Image (cartoon, rainbow, N blue to C red; front, side, top):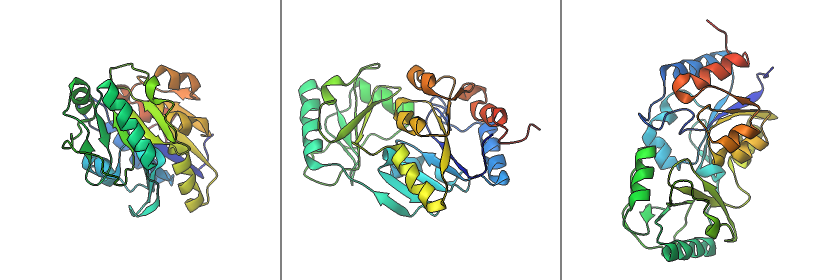
Length: 261
């Protein structure tokens, strides 16, 4: 039984909204409304930056109780006010760009403004279609603050050449990219910020990809989407149906979070 004092944490792409039509299904929306009516606190926990998440329209879909962005590096409260923000080590940024240049891979820097290190290639365009995202202009790193990075490589690539760069996490995605974040920071650490804010002790995690691993490790209950990454599903408490088959709703019904009407 999931208690009302558990924070409910939702990944975005492949969990709240699909990666084909880039929409939130009617059943997911209705489930979220019913959860709010029951008094649960709901947060978004995404690899997207704040600007990218804003473009999806999800931040205004319901009255969320907080937002985890860039896999834990930015945390916002219910009023979308920043309560935590970490930026990457400059030497880590330089070293990663150098390695990507050697391999011929493009890198997006989540800075102000965002830039990409080379002209977009097939991997960038494939990832853009997957997320329905915006490709930033080509630019050069000049020591500006960087919240996180994205490296674009072949589908299924393990990004092994990047794993030894000090100070970073490498999180291969479900398309032609990997999220690059700060070592020691994750969705789980971001969630801890909001647990402390609300004086709560535990949380339930909904996710589909490898950037949800740390969030799943520390969750009271972890729920993987049916179409999600196999490794994530193997560590989940429960595997629900796919996002195209009422996955969120069915999980909520399974755990009696909402009533079956």
